[in-house]
Length: 398
Ligand SMILES: Cc1ncc(COP(=O)(O)O)c(C=O)c1O
Image 1 (cartoon, protein in one colour):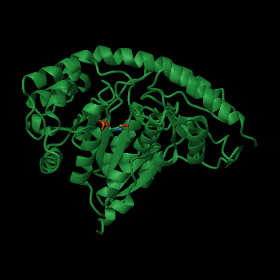
Image 2: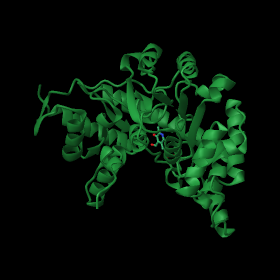
Image 3: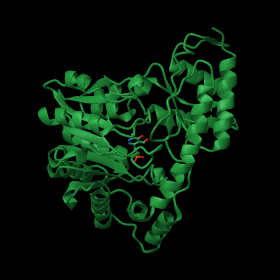
Image 4: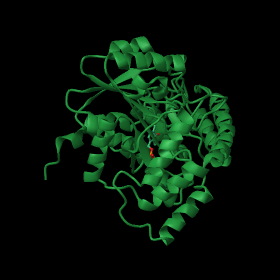
């Protein structure tokens, strides 16, 4: 059977693939330290689980409205009004099966052949593949480590062409941990308004911030900016609910209606029980997130220090999310026991095979100089994993 040609243009998610390999090794009894996974190691908070149990007991186990239950859409509306001062009506909110699904619905609703989608790099792995799956062309816009990965507004201006349809923002950013400041966002908004670009603002890590960093949603810069922005968010990261699969989108009514129609013809509603759980997360999850972030902060500092202690590795302190994104260019070109380490992929392969540490290489994020490590894992794992990486690097020669 001949597959559709679009399938040959994408690859499976490399982060999920690395996590699956690490899990398979662990299942064989190998003691793997897994820094690849993009999920909090905390358990879902009890009030959230209780809401799900109550939903099951009450028989809330049938189809729901395709776009999500009113109670959850209302909770999202209240959150956005309370936290960002933005007012949305119910048709402007769509609940989907995770933020990744929200992004996919949006790509399907808005992108088509000939469209260019600007993606600042380093970027989260699925943005480009989702654009490609919907016949659009990803246009990668490099940002610099020396600028703290801020988008250079002049570079953005130059990247815009008559075909540019959208720009995807992700603050705090996976993988860099960078957060965008107001001035940068204002510059981006000005360009988006001038060229009538859709702004896709992926805010899934908005609550995971350190050192007093604040989250600014570009949609808050004015009603005309909000009218061109779709906010993407969800409960996976803030409330340790990755497996429950609830994300949501908020934005202009015509776009959200199109996305809702696509969802009604594809997945229908997200899991009914998870929706009830998500209502509880949005209402009662705040203190849980705060505690989790205090712990992440602690781990962040240990991981970044230990990475910087390894010769050949330098690591910026991330201001958000839960990833360290060390620069390994000082290691590239060195000889390992099995040959030269020429790329982040080669370094990641070496670490997995020889040191039993799973990290994600930079290539799928658009970097040839970095690897990504998640510190959403225990302090013990962080110490053990970094011991192993340091020992592995010691065996390299120039
Ligand atoms: C930047 C970013 N956006 C979206 C998602 C998808 O989140 P969800 O689990 O809600 O689909 C992730 C998950 O890793 C992410 O890192």
